[in-house]
Amino acid sequence: MQITVVDTANETQIVPFKRYEYANLMELIVNTCYDEIGECRGRGLCGTCVVEIGEGSSLTEPPNKKEMEVFQNMNLTGEEVRLACQLMLTHELDGVKVRVLEGY
Ligand code: FES
Image (tube, rainbow, N blue to C red; front, side, top):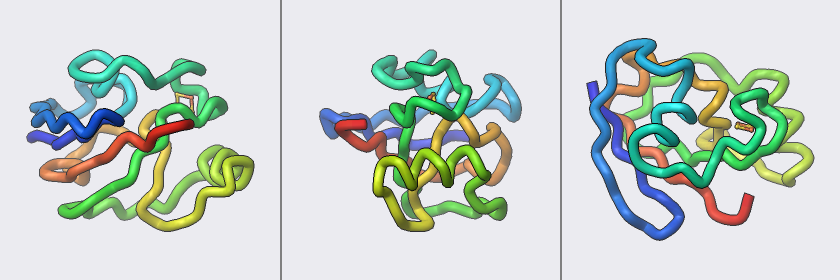
């Protein structure tokens, strides 16, 4: 499986991953291509790992309570916005393009 990550400098990287290889998408991104996110280490508090989910998404679960609270505090809306630390590495992310949002 693989995912395309676009960082805040608009650099694009294709990152291969295995199911549950890391605890979540944030850890995959931090450990493979972009380590400027994940301030709260995946506790769903800091909002630095906000990503926009692009084409190819087959995510079925809506944002959880932690995500909704962070988005509300950040005035973020839109179904395509998620916290990378709250997304598990499953087949639903295979082929997805995610953009790390700047300024969070
Ligand atoms: S790492 Fe802090 S909210 Fe995701």
